[in-house]
Image 1 (cartoon, rainbow, N blue to C red):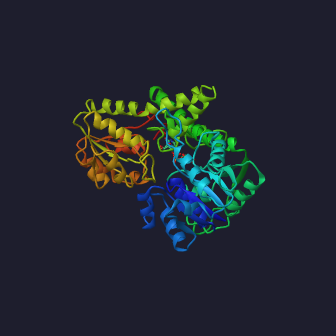
Image 2 (image 1 turned 180 degrees about the horizontal axis):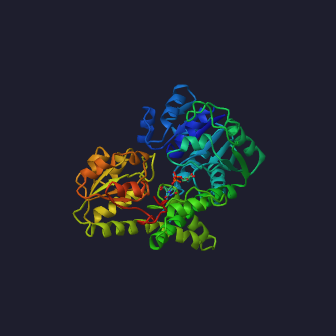
Image 3 (image 1 turned 90 degrees about the horizontal axis):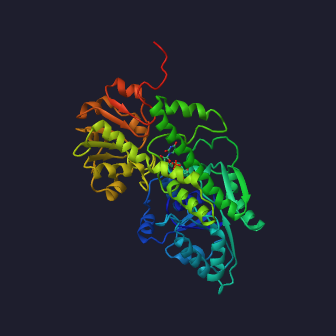
Length: 458
Ligand code: UDX
């Protein structure tokens, strides 16, 4: 099918590149001229594993093109995926102005019927508003519009993998025709019929993705409900961590045993600095606001959000207790991205922590494998070092703020010898406390107080 993708951010670029990869003819468009120019030059405005190779190869092989003009991206295609940002407004509502602008563009530029697919994360009822907007803006054109919801479940750092090997594909439709078209679009993924850039030796055998067909409202709700539940799990794990520190228990041993129950599952029970990124914080806010608007006080989510917002405060207190005074202390910070394997610093707990330490007079020296450029622009007050060892040199304390796997493989004796005090505060429980303490570090982490874990007697 001929498909266009409006919006070339994390979701749009992954969607466009993957749909081209599985055989469709895709046109991408972004209204941001700077981003569009970078893409035309073959440079991606963001880092996502496997994405650059996918984008460049599909452009070269002619399945992926970039529209210079908005009209070009709309006029002759069968389906249009809306992948524009829906950031939080001051009051926590999702800002849908970009969606409205795209609806106007589609309605005024279309010359034939279109399937219009909302892939951006939107509050329930957006689909109905979109449908109405297309009808109102498009009253002068003969084009008919069919609206569908197809929420993305892409995790940054594994978005290409998540798109090509999803657990489930959810579509919210109003009629069988839209279902048929979406099934056709996703057929190669449903059947696993495509060469996979993530698994060149062949896609992992596993169950085929579920293709869930429901109404537009239910489909929109599935997205918010899923993300908010994952955020709830994380806040529950963080509450357990605080309890473990008071009771002398080990949160990792507790959550590991909990996760053995398939009804609970082992994932997203990781205690630490809490959740960030451009999804959980804004989705949980939008969901709370949506519930408020229909007369339901979603206190459960409000507490999960409040608990998450306290994570940085309590970790700063942990640092202060260890340092006594933060002012004028040199603090090494490993990790700035909101999670490993991405350069994204939006709503990053690591960046929030760096801001707080600077505000208290700490001299922050930071390093991140991918997010340096974006962090330097967002937080000019910190010093940015070339590698973890330079970052740790002369530090009074070292904080692990993002659990990049490469940090676990560092020469921690060399780190220790370079520091002015061997004080290590692990905000993401990346390291083994026994190893760290055996190396002579004063080591603190989250929910794993000293003498907490069982070790077989010698
Ligand atoms: C999330 C959802 O996972 C994805 O399905 C949805 O489409 C978009 O939002 P993403 O925001 O990219 O994806 O990252 P994710 O891996 O979910 O992590 C979100 C945040 O939770 C990160 O800050 C991460 O550090 C934190 N986290 C995750 C924890 O603190 N503990 C955990 O156990 C897992």
